[in-house]
Image (cartoon, rainbow, N blue to C red; front, top):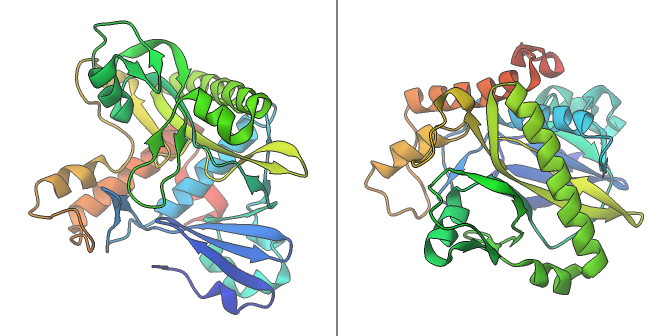
Length: 302
């Protein structure tokens, strides 16, 4: 599943996990998170990659960690490949812009989701129950409508398929009341700060998910942060409640796949070049609009 060199052949480097998009390694006492250019849709990793996608994910994560650093500690050590351990030196070119060296954390078993708008599984829950994760909402809300205030809607991470939405009481059962309140409050603080920044850049942050862990007993933000893969970003100038929104993610891929005769079981169909390029452009546009920086400048990309 990897489109990267075999890093585990380096001395002291061990591959310990492979997700849909990321590869995870131990490097001594630390972790190396590597974002590939793979793309998934309908819970299937597709055979076609999106050039530069992993660098967008890593670059945006680094940007947000810098911006939000005053709110919560994070597990990042560095994204500078020239500062990586010597064992990774032969792989610097392959890792540049897409890898993050991190402290190891005891990961909390909860996906911490903040929603400011009614979309996705939240919209589905609301249609069925008038609530999202047990939080009752006013009647008559439309799809994509802004909520009266942002809400914390946690989920359990699924090993396959979709994550399972849960209520706050279940979070308390899993990690204890004090820690549950801390992650809820931090999730909403991070969402507000990110949404305020994104709005200044002409983007609405509809919802996003964070992951937390404990590093030496300290609650710490981990994994990717506020990327198009973990968030719904909508352009302000196209926003209209009552319908699905244009988004800065893999919308072109989902739309094209929905038109194909495919049972949504692996392997997925190869993506045609125009869909690949349009999707790449959406990811790059998200990076540039949110950061105010050219993507070509991230980690010396040319």
